[in-house]
Length: 225
Image (cartoon, rainbow, N blue to C red; front, side, top):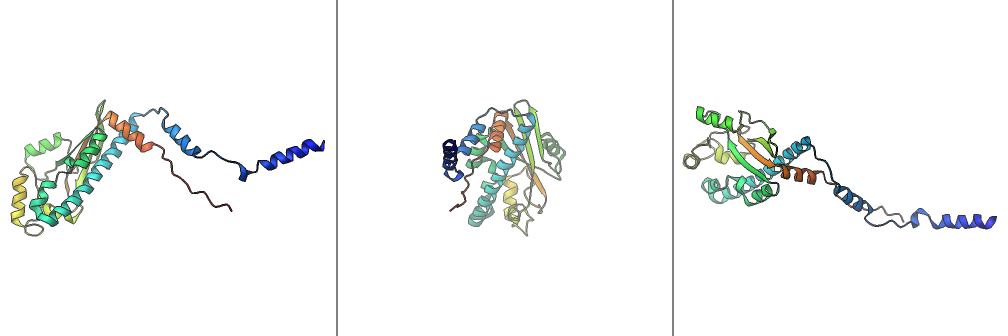
């Protein structure tokens, strides 16, 4: 009877935890398998994806705009920078928009506009505060809007007060180049307009999938000995 008992003790000793070999990448494989599972994306999920995509794309565009304008203002002043004030057509922004099947644009808000301009702004979905809006105007189309607020002193170099932030000649150049916009006379904290984005359903679904996809993060194992 003692021999079977001895054999059992030897088998248990051979299977100590520090001697068990685990397959490498097991957790990574499990997460990748979960990512390939078919998931149901609800309408509310697509609306969340629209906001995420809009915030990501417009935030990236604004960052590029500030860096580009700072460079051009230092190199050639307002005249040179005026040619770069449309970040929605920057190649990097356009590439990002194409990836998510999105069409971005910037629209201006005129606080003291004529009745015709006010009607045009209202038709574009703008209000005096240009509130953030997320909607689904059609079954296969999503809409995003958020305000463009003058938050940086760099913006005053073009949109500030003539005679203080920019010269009268520079103000005249901007009014000539952008006759339909109130380009100057603005203050920090004022709403300049809004970003608007239309997003195809497929792009919203793809962005949601990417945003919620599990990502493998390697963890350093503690030193045992």
